[in-house]
Image 1 (cartoon, rainbow, N blue to C red):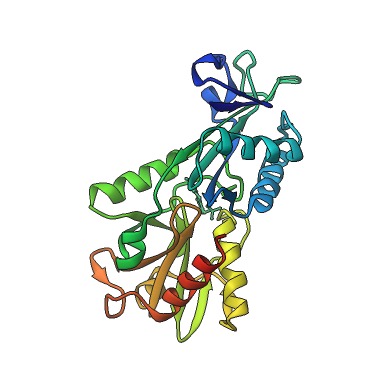
Image 2 (image 1 turned 180 degrees about the vertical axis):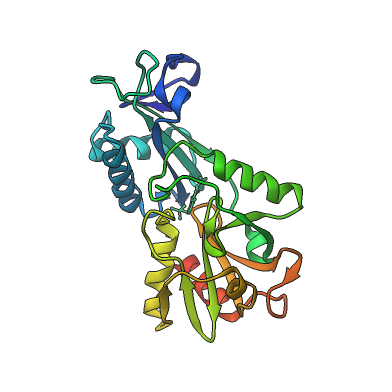
Length: 275
Ligand code: PDD
């Protein structure tokens, strides 16, 4: 079963109009959430972000957040997904094709749950990344369905055998194609500040919270590619990747090439708070 507006229905029973603006313009927003032991991790934060993003685009959600919460729990129960992921999106709905936002259209929510194992091996050993120019638009704070800038960057990484692409604007590191980025330098964490150039990841916020609890100083300030490459430790964060160590950037090892100590401590706290 899948989620269709406020109902659980069979996947094959859903009909999306060919003029749905999500389909034609990428006019919509989405969320990816993790399920651990039948509990949705930081659901409230995801719903708050959904609400913010929809509001920024003037999209009215087809269901209340309270109803959506109930429906998402019903979905994972029906699909028997105790550990895995939830995806859902809301588009502005169908209207005659025109760049102008239609005066009235009925927004459409679709979502589904899947079993997906955690990337344990990668989290243990660390991954390699490439760096590439950030060619995305200037409202990266909105989790919009327009993902081509990210798609092309991630594809470039994969073609070079790398796990993720780290994006920069004129030498300033912003985030990953589908993740946020942290570095450790002299015992302090550094990450790009929130604003229009990055998505404020739910995992990013969680990691900053956990770092504060561990009395690790967090500097939310822009830093350069050069600083990234001279970091003591580097890791990325996302719902899917949790705290993912980076051990190689553009073919060169990060520090000793081993997963760093602060990264490990944050992974441990993250793990302890999952359930
Ligand atoms: N991506 N930055 C970008 C550009 C992202 O696409 C994502 C998430 C993040 C991390 O956000 P969070 O911690 O809330 O997952 C940061 C999702 C997982 C995706 O597109 O699949």
